[in-house]
Image 1 (cartoon, rainbow, N blue to C red):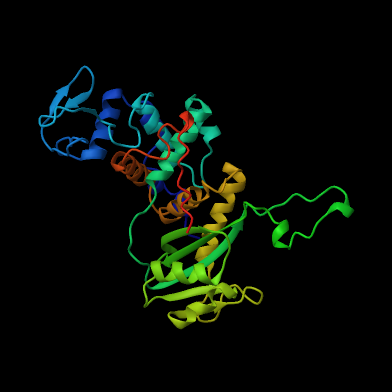
Image 2: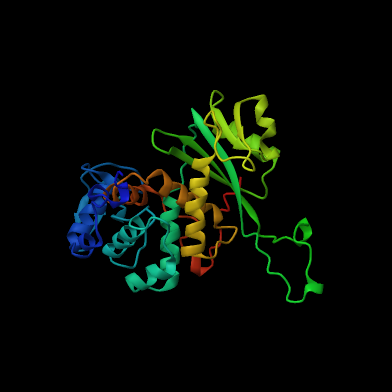
Length: 331
């Protein structure tokens, strides 16, 4: 039997020891290279690219054109940071080495920082994972939905219990995560997620038309929400009450694989996912699924590059000082 990729030596190309033994100068150069590569620094104020004046004692640059003073993290997710740069690199390394998510409480203990600091830092990393690409999925595409936050604790006395099948008796925070996955050579190649209130025909029709190429073949289960898609797409349906995979390859196994990882992250790591942050957690899980065949070094480099190039967060900058403008990212 072939060895699983995560158990192989190729999957382990970066460790925490490399970060904790790194000097401040090495951490500075690593973040600088991730942000600007081998080129000159770019002024975040005017966009000028030049060999700007470098103030060595402060580790800052002064723009030759607009005279603005900026640092290695100015204009990024880590702007106005108060912790050493190695702490942020260590947080990314810890985030990288977990296969099924990472809780803010554990991060606060590992790095010896306040829970509030760890909570915001984790969400800033999640914000860097948001994919703004408008490219549509093609080829063989699977779509499915799963409900979260649906549990309602039953009353103690049998006479006081209500019918939880009725809409008015269900949890108002109940949401449905829709995943659309493009099949690749090994498993799925690309994943998109959306959070809606329910798995209905109107939302499914809109999401598929906006995110799936017209020539794609869509695999879906027996839910009525996907009935309208037959008019515009080549559909393959599978009835899970009878089987999980059809004779012609029709199945939603890759979508179920995503939900399997998400459930483990939800129940085993994060535990609580509020509605306004649900899409961020689901998107994180989609990223972990899409990079499951990457080595830890590749994921670490990609995350640093994303954090270094992502603009300052409007949602999480000053969050504990009253800024609560968190994007819900609902479909």
